[in-house]
Length: 185
Image 1 (cartoon, one colour):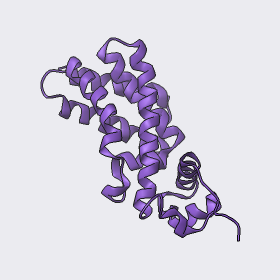
Image 2 (spheres, helix red, strand yellow; image 1 turned 90 degrees about the vertical axis):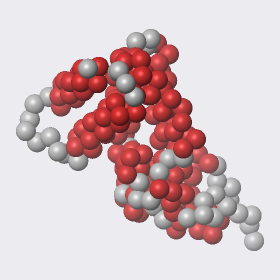
Image 3 (tube, one colour; image 1 turned 180 degrees about the vertical axis):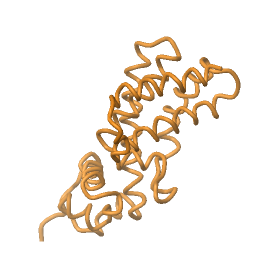
Image 4 (cartoon, helix red, strand yellow; image 1 turned 90 degrees about the horizontal axis):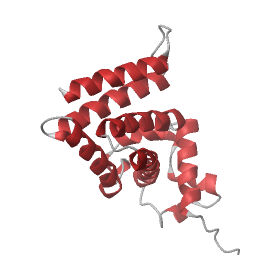
């Protein structure tokens, strides 16, 4: 009998994300992921107790990807407004690449399928820090407003919700400007 194939964490996450984007989040099962990486489903239990934990691996990976995109903005931007624009644009770019996995960040099918709090913490620190410098008052409601607007725009865009014509990129930028003006008071 041959030794079981070893699967790297990157290979596993890539398979989960690929299945999610190709077939939808509901298609991510222990069996489908195991098949995609060339192992038997019981072998996955060493990495994840259930499908929600598999989805969490993908959600965590997406948060790391988003955080990396935002870090490239924060390295060169010293103005909190620029950081918030970068956050919104980075989220839009992630949603364009991986709409189904991006949805796990905001509306996972189960709390265990969403991103890990410790993985989200650096992203939240950056977001709340920029909002605190930009908008008066408690930064959490303002951060939620920006995030909800950006995510809603992204999901409408990915689902073909803008059918009236016009320049969707310009609409994103105009909407972002309106939201930021509102947050600044």
